Length: 279
Length: 104
Image (spheres, rainbow over the protein chains, first blue to last red):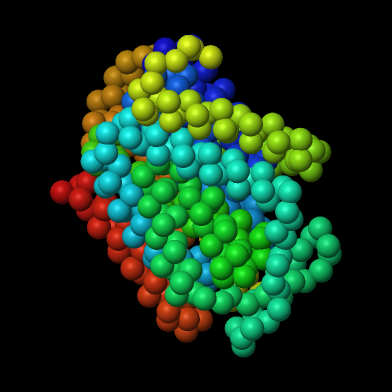
């Protein structure tokens, strides 16, 4: 591999790791467009190596969340069933779909993530229901409020079925699927947002592995390109988690929403093969 | 130590250990790739179209979710939490099925 290309991919993955860690996103949402737009990589190959990046990011961030005892492993094991099923459907569908269609779908999903992120910023969706609704009470310690929060999970069946949708997007586009899993857990199953993020991050490891295995079997994972992605994402996520408290997230999220919308439009234009000035 | 803490600690230790190995092997692979573009020793062992080092990296990386699922099955079974144990067992079965498709 050309050293210059190695450095470029390493830097891109490093930035993807930092931003992903700061904003609670998997690296895939930045990696896939970067690899296709900046490095002209075919969409299917970009999705394939993105699974590797997401797997590293998930493992790395899960370590922090498990250490802080926020991850709900019982909930994760139930939702994984739906997520893995969806991931298989998504990954096999992606193999059948043309790159341009995938690019357009990716753009639409990216646009949704940007709008959702902006909405969350405006309306704080923090812990909307912590009241106990069943005998199955669970708890976690919230460091920011210095309180032990008790919650109970409701609508497990509905959550499991809906997590198939998250899995489909994960397998189809090489994303973690957190943008879907977190709202399912938080809004439908009434899980506190911090637990939802931690649990989603833990689940993503399995959904991305399933996608990676299917893409690997079909020759869409280039191991040589995966090396700088593994290193970049890992060290980026480490730096991101360390500077997390010193950065004004509101400004960062605002800027990043605009960047995401710009990338989304580029991906849709690429997908529709519209000739535009190279902006 | 409660059973839940034990589960969390086991998973955390396994993920951390494998991740460290993955990063070290990736650094070694990059150094070898840059220093000696054709390393006879490493390239002589080829598995699934990859050299030994690259195969080890991918294999270890894929082992992270597999090992944590295995730990969860064992610990949930010990806690008599059958629904979670069976659910995780199905997930592990699917993963191993996909691995088998690659090997066969």
